[in-house]
Length: 144
Image: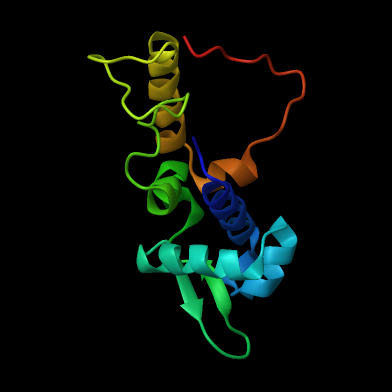
């Protein structure tokens, strides 16, 4: 559903959101921080820069940084730029056609989960990721 590139984009953007004063972070350093290939991450960051989510600066002291405040960038925006606008409309089983007219075996279960996941990603910002306390005792919330 969410590609490896999408997960790496989310991880990189979270690291950038944690940087003080919007400092530029070299892509090579960022790639080491999140465990991604520098070449792959460079392509990801180019796409995010073209979309206006990051700024890039070449040369010494250069790198990437958030183009907007962390509280203005949603997780869904990031994923849409990397995985495309249909990121959450794909079949969970990977089948070609999956809709109300021609549902896959999990469509009835997946559809409400997909809607809830879309809402969660659209309402969650990078600031939420870095300011939300983690609670290991928090109960899991079911999809439906």
